[in-house]
Length: 358
Image 1 (cartoon, rainbow, N blue to C red):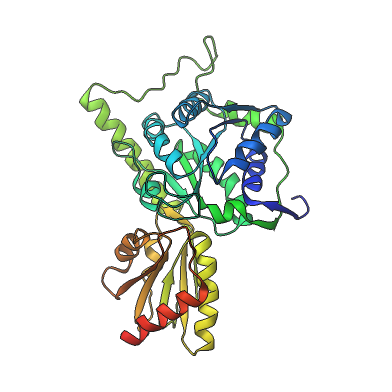
Image 2 (image 1 turned 180 degrees about the vertical axis):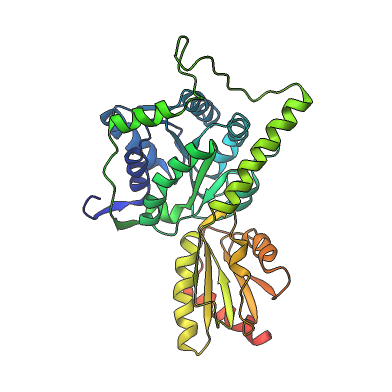
């Protein structure tokens, strides 16, 4: 690990990707993630990698498809409306079983929306906007350091599962600055070893591994069904192996908050405010949004009066919270629709009123 240094989130995300072996980046400018594209344009050539500013988001995801098919470690980044345009390409990459790391520095919407932070891309990320039976593996770090640490795992997981992996952050994490420790960049030899391990990749006529074919279209119904079923088994394995979450103080809590990303940091301060008022509050913080940590709600205390989803959207995370709670406790919502952030005092006051009503 390198010594800690102060970095803007977007630049730290980009450096973490290069350190993890990303050598192909295709991007198109959009606020609030433009520093990623700028950083990649400067640093990718130094790492003997390829940077292309595409003419559109559609072009960027198509370029990523081609590079991934050839065995490269590929990343794309964008923000909410741009990710929406890339969703068709992501579903194609899922169908073709191709690895990708996608970074969504999300903003408030819908549509063009605004450039301020938001979390209303939850459904977009976890339910997907492309067609067919597919999933994207989704991680939601709560700090710049956690995003940096997850980045290498994201590339390894994408390669292992041959599937897109998304880091869902928001404009606040992308634009803020924090001390961060970065890993050393992996060597060219390691990158070549990773590429050679992908026996399925398209590496050119005459390769000793023989003929490979990568495709999304399957015209025969039995072939399509077999492909979907095989992919479904992969997703079932992901649900067993890739769940991540943090659980704090839930054993004897009067109320249990659920929040992800930067909002969970606000909630942690609200927990301290409530504690000073004699109210015990806990927090479940999903780190993997898909697969979602439903098991985190299996051992709620008898003392818990309510589970409260806190989010910068008008009730999206709450749908998975309800599936996890399964009617065992009342589930409530504290939200803002993005742009303006919740404050710890606001969360604590609203939670106190919910508790009093119970």
